[in-house]
Image (tube, rainbow, N blue to C red; front, side):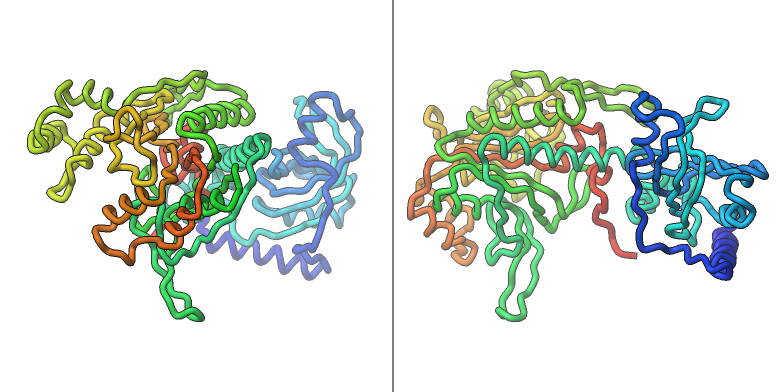
Length: 487
C-alpha cells in the first residue's frame, strides 16, 4: 500500500498536468438538474426513461479503468449513480482529462440514462467538468477510521467513508424539523433566549464562565432555558418552545457532552399531565414520520437486534416512591436516613459523604431503576427537593407534580407543573442557594411577582432522543462534532 505522501504527490502532479492543459479544476459553480441518487431511483421506478438527459454532480467514490472506457460512481447527499465514459464518445483530449480523475474528486457530469449489460442504472457520459480536485486520498470504508477519536475529530472523513453515519445525521436533522412542525401545528411560538446569562439558572450544574469586555463583567453560558421562558409566560406568550444549545462544565460520557441540544416548551394553563400527553404525542409523531414505525430496534455491532423499544401509546405511568419500594425494599421510606445510606451503599449506588438523604434515594433510582426502564415510562411525583421550580403535589406535599420520561434506560424528558407562587419560589431558591444571595436570579423573581399563569413545562434532550430513535449507544454518534480535547 502506498503511503499518503506518495499519493498526495501523484495528485499534485495530476493537478499541474491539468493546469498545463488550461483546465482549472476548482470551479465556481455547476448546476445539477437532479440528485445522483434521485436519478438512479427515478430511472429504476420508471419515472425517467432510457436516453433521458441528466446533469448530476458529486464526489467520485469508485473508479474502474477498462482501457478505452471507464466507470466511476458519483455520490451526493441523495445517493449514488454510475457514470460510463467512452473514449470514442468523449474524444482523445477529453478522455485524457478524464484519466486525471481520482477518488474523492468532485465532478459535474452530463449524459443520458441507460442500463449496462448487468442491469446497473448508469449515465452515458457526454461531457463533464472537474469541480474540485481532492489532494488527499479519501479513506477506504474502514481503513484509517477504526480509531474512534479520528472518526469524531475528522467527522468529514467518517461521513465520506460510512454512509450509515451520514444517514444518522440526516435523520437527526429530520427529527428536529418534525419537532418544530409538531409544535407549530399546536399553536406554539418558537422563541430565542440568551445563551450568555449573568446568573445561570433553571438547573443544578457547573457552568462555563466568560467575560464581556465592554460591560466589564462575567457571564455564564446557560445551563438551561427555563427561567427566560417563564419570563415570557409572564409577558403573555402562552405557548412557546425553543430548541437551543445548553452548556455544562462537567464530565463526558456515553450520555453526556458538555455542549448539548435541548428542547424546552411551556403551555400556560396546563400542568404536568398536559405535558405528559405532549411528550407522548410528540415522540410518537416524530418516530412515525421519520422512521415509519413505532417499533425501534437497537442492534449490536454484528447487526443483531438486542432490544426493541415499543412506542405504542399509552405509555406506562409509575410513581417514583412505588418504584423505589419495589427495588430497594417496601420499607425504604420508613427506615432511618442512616439505614437508607447503608442500604444504598450495599446496593452499589454511588454516594458520598456530602449526599443528602433525598440524593441517596436518587442515587439508588439511577443505579437500580432507571437502567431497567427500556420501554417508555413516565416516573411521576418525585421528591420536592429534586425539582425546586415545580409545584408541590396536592395529595402528597413531600413530592412535586413532576415526571421523568425514561426510555431506553435513560431520562429523555423531564416535565412538571411550574411553580407560579413567587413567595414559595423565592423561599425554595433561597434554600437551594444556601444563603448566598448573589446566586438568586432577582430579575426572574421580580418577573414572577408580576404574575405568571399556571403552566406546564417540558425539557427534552434532543441528543438522547436521537440516540433512542436512531439506535445509537453513544451521544457522540448523533452529534456531528462532539467535544474533544484539542490536539
